[in-house]
Image 1 (cartoon, rainbow, N blue to C red):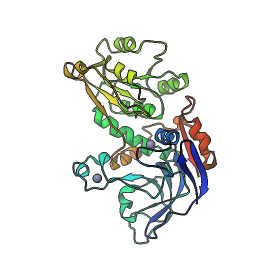
Image 2: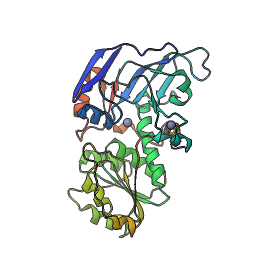
Image 3: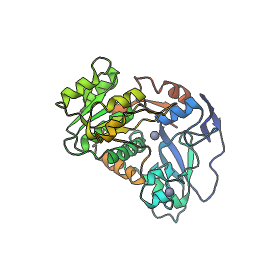
Image 4: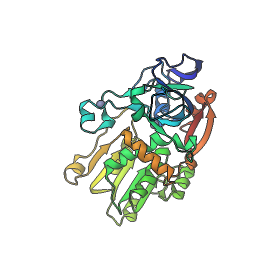
Length: 339
Ligand SMILES: [Zn+2]
Ligand SMILES: [Zn+2]
């Protein structure tokens, strides 16, 4: 099969590789795989948080079942499915507590989604596969994983009716967090973004937008919240000064939430008075619980989330290097690779 294999820093090649082995497995022909910022970071660094090269990246993919045992009662050949690429084990101490996103023995599909096929162990089918309804397009369905990650984050933030939220950065995740915050009952979601194109999309999706290069963010938020400060500040970009700034406009007992991961230096120096006296919570998350995929699917199916405006290009697999190089340009949001 054809696959994009990452060998090291910015070294990715389209190659002919062996089909995933193991005759008992379910085989899925991948139709599309979204590029995630974590794929871009892995491409730039030559490795990821989880893997060393050579590796086939991609975890936001959908496809159709081309091989499955006739005995499987839940799925059949031809079913269009989304794949949960990393499935929790169910028995580690975190799984026992229901903290599936922290599972220490995540089982991953045979390879990443920037390939023609992937195989899934038959015994994980129930947990790893989701049938995609006809009304949902393949491109839309590639958003299930990023939406699931955002649902995990927002459940941790405990947004309440009438809350005011600030989201720093209107990339794909910022724009999904914006829509989900509004669904959760936030009365106002302020999106801070320097790029006009991204700001305009945020505005069209219901945000109060601000360009922090033109307007002092703290002053803007003070005015917008009648001096109270926001209930939750979510940073989708990891920059120390941005996270520190969030403590200046988050109300007492509010939450500063780190959603974006650091590329290089993750150290962060913060004023402990904000935690001790003002009782501001500092939290973060990555990944999802498997059931967040089903919630994401329901929200997409019922048109409660709008993902089509977040797709800026759809590229064939052969263009993956260019797509990874261009992903961080502000005029690009989600880039989807079609096999
Ligand atoms: Zn992702
Ligand atoms: Zn586990």
